[in-house]
Amino acid sequence: MKLRIQGNALRLRLKRPEVEQLAAGVALEDRIVFGPGSASIFSYVLKSAPVNTISVVYTPGKITVLLPDANARTWNASDRVGFEADVPAGDGASVHVSIEKDFKCIDGDSSEDQRDAYPNPNENAAC
Image (cartoon, rainbow, N blue to C red):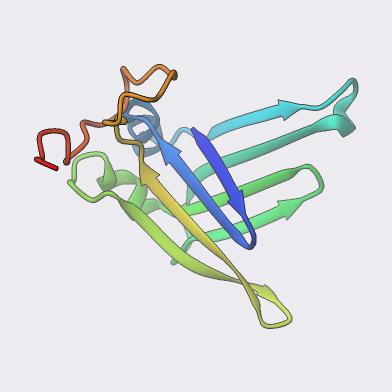
């Protein structure tokens, strides 16, 4: 699972096995370690939950994104690319959350392993 943070926006991109795990009720978690000790760890979690809309829970050092159970269960078997929502964050602010299937890069410029990425719908398109 990839996380991109830009301003007040979160974007999570999932490869095929991760979408399958989410559909099976398995929470996805990753982390980055900045130094020794638990206070130097930042983690992010995506899990299905009995919520009506996408929600975000922040605790120090951890972001948890909740996707409605019904969306998580059916997403894997659908052509739907993803989900997005503006989640209220208090004081009139909101966090824009995007949860998407991760497609293969077609520009040939990626050095990352793309075996489990979804086929890019534009792969055979003429420029």
